Length: 414
Ligand SMILES: [Zn+2]
Image (cartoon, rainbow, N blue to C red; front, side, top):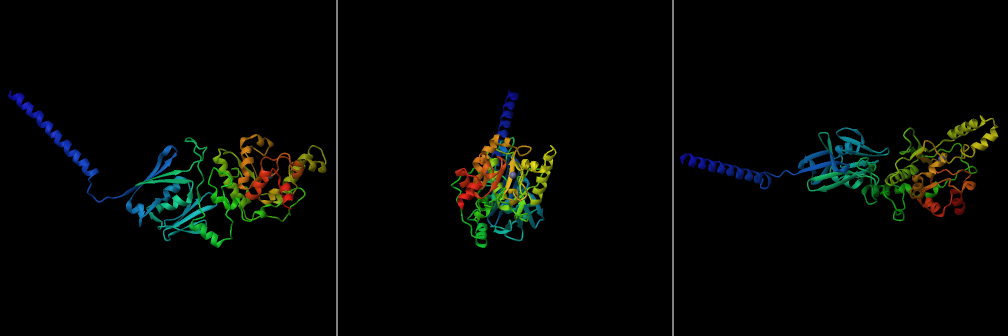
């Protein structure tokens, strides 16, 4: 009996102790999660995501780093590494490069950022905490293209913008650029300081991507300045060198090609759109060619043809069908380029799907197919599916819609 009774009391005791412990544990959980009386320390977590929303890097910051005078800040150094931006500078002033031509400089001594040489007012001064550069989040959200933020209470998700043709396994990212809208202080400064530019509307053409940052190039205010005609009968002087010439971003990787800046910028926009449409393997194989280079090429081809045992005059007749005599090449204007996805320029490019895309879309970026099929008698050149000429969107659209070549269009304008 006693043994049994004491045994019963023992089980009951263990039961009560267990119950008490459970209650205590529940109270503790309640205390630390819901009823925590400690001063709240707001934390912000920034997740930098890969395709499929996999977290690549995460930054966690307490309120004193995440906020500056009520302004939510953003860890830009981590973002720059995430985006693969080139950079230079130190812990006081640092410059980040977007592509080949754009840059942003942040200084801890200035509440204004320098965007491509223009001052841009920030809502809080950038600051370094350790190796991290904190800048106002709204700058990234509002003025950088190619990166998107989702901000919920205490959690910022950062993603790179992808093109339609992007997949999880082979992501295709939109280039990061400084996106300056017409209503931003920077654009207002430019408008006030620079020459007046008409504001063409983008609604009239359909675009997959946001071309607004490139519009001033695609549709230049001085549109008629791009109508220069160079062909076999309308020659260009030996001394003519266009300016400013800049490197073509989308040149084939083994070469450096150049073009007039306005045309090159418009071409960059065309490439962004072309990649968004799923065509990723076209590159520029030729841009500006000097008179001297054209002279060299023409002589080289002529001598090659002469090896068949024909006279120079006969060889030149043959070369004239595929290469321009010096002074008759449009490449000397810096306004055209050869682009394709073949080892070398070839009429078989016309069989490629991307050629079809170029024919239908080049004009939206101010480019025309310069030597179309069926116009050989007028242009004096064989069909060149790879050769595109910049004339600005206004003229290019007219030429495209009416199925003309440049010679016909200029004749009608007279
Ligand atoms: Zn060409």
